[in-house]
Amino acid sequence: MKKLALSDEILMQIEKPARYIGNELNSVVKDTSQIRFAMCFPDVYEIGMSHLGIQILYDMFNRREDTWCERVYSPWPDLHKIMKEQHIPLFGLESQEPIKNFDFIGLTLQYEMCYTNILQILDLAQVPLLAKDRTDDDPIVLGGGPCSYNPEPIAAFFDCFYIGEGEIQYNAFLDLYKEMHSKNYSRKSFLHEAAKIEGIYVPSLYEVSYKSDGTISAFTPLYDDIPATIKKQVDMDLTEAVYPEKPVVPFIKATQDRVVLEIQRGCIRGCRFCQAGMIYRPNREKDVERLKELAHTMLAETGYEEISLSSLSSSDYSQLEELINFLIEECSKKHVNISLPSLRIDAFSLDIMQKVQDIKKSSLTFAPEAGSQRLRNVINKGLTVDNILSGSREAFLGGWNKVKLYFMLGLPTETEEDMRAIPELANDIAALYYETVPKEQRNGKCQITISTSFFVPKPFTPFQWATMLDPSDYLERAKIVNDHVKEQLNHKSIRYNWHEADVTVLEGILARGDRKISEAILYVYQHGGFFDAWSEYFNFNLWLEAFDACDIDMDFYTKRPRQEDEIFPWDFIDVGVSKDFLLREWRTAHNELVTPNCRMRCSGCGARQFDGGVCFENQN
Image (cartoon, rainbow, N blue to C red; front, top):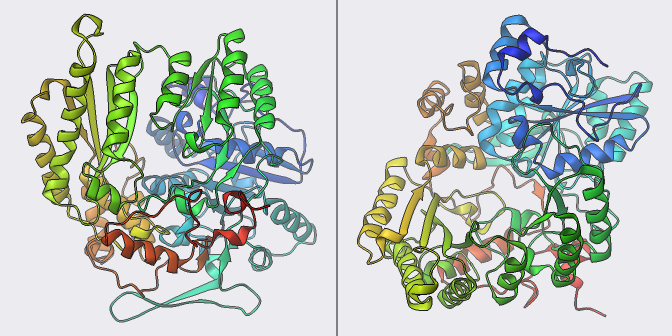
């Protein structure tokens, strides 16, 4: 057995040592390889092991004979402290060897609040934090994932980014590295050639200039032979795409501790606040026969006792009924549970859920996002009061008595009337329960849980032009909702939770920031800040100190109205959805009009350029 990077003495001192020892079922160990790749998730093991994207790329890279891909997760603060004190370099789980000796350190960027953990990984790996300080002896640091669609706030820390879905260009990228490395080309030469591969962005090869008001005047490549626009990479054939049939099974319980079946990518709905619904266009489905094969194989290869569907909107998968019926039959034989997230609450869904769930333990989830119909029209949420109430009625008649409702506060055009509509809707649902279910048939009292997050404008959405508020203003909105909950007739059946306001403001700055923000991120990490996604470690005062020290005006990134023709830090990326379409949707939102979903009518977003998916479903 391989020698562990951490001694028994250290493992006995820390929480959950199984996070760091590797050797899990289906992990890949190789004797030799020409390319060593550390696939890093900048959060704790249990979160990272739940991420499907890493599992896909891990499987894809390790299918190459010349490449060994290993996994790395952020050490928890207890181990972080020991590694710093004892100068233990961060290591790959599979080999237990220092990743500073690898060819690549790849980081998946899922959430802005993990940005300081990027620096934690580089620091513990003993790799220079800034790309400009690295030499030919250091690994290439590569970023990908949804946050890479605005890479500018963290551009200083990365040698390059991959924009889009990894199944398309990573093999060309690794092939280029292998060829150039064999001929002893410098990292600078490799990065220049890599920038010519569609979807690869090398920040050091581009220059940003600013106007006197702080907005961007131009974004320019430094060389004529690299593209001015980076095009998102899209895999249009999900059925044939690589997918991990033997996913790695963790030793300890992960957040998503189950087989995950990705049934489709993209979404037809067009919610104006939703970044994923825009950047993953067009909607593409995986064939049901392939999904049946994967379900059978993955359950056999993992021993998991639960299977879940992965999709932005599972109810929109056209072959859902056939797939569910197959899973019910397959899983009942093996005593495997089925998890069905992202379903619309209608008669079909409730019938299915009755077959696969223990009603006494489960709750139903609606995400109206806004309390009033007016505001739901503004955000293009295709959900009416009738949908919600009829779905709730069906659920109550079916035996459910717990409902979770998710909303956002601080949405564009929001009024106090919209805020007060949130508890009023919850009250209507509770009243419906007592009207619908006879007293002798009730399984206890109705439980309605309201949760509100605060809206954060994201790049490549119609709301990328929206302004934000101060933390105190967000909390005042939550107070309005909370006070109005207490005024409802059925308030004893309603519980209310809300998100942290200061985290919201920071997330908004990091989401829409430019290159200037990297200085503040570096300041926070160097002054002890990381694991910002965890409330027990988040220190908003340290961020305020950092912005002040770096002379960064927070209001410029949050409260400032953006002009319709402003150049955004991410405008050099082409995601297939045009800025003209997003601007059209921004204006349509202010007119409180709904845009039909992609199956009802094409709205000309630009995604037809990919020649497939929902855009061409009804063509002969």
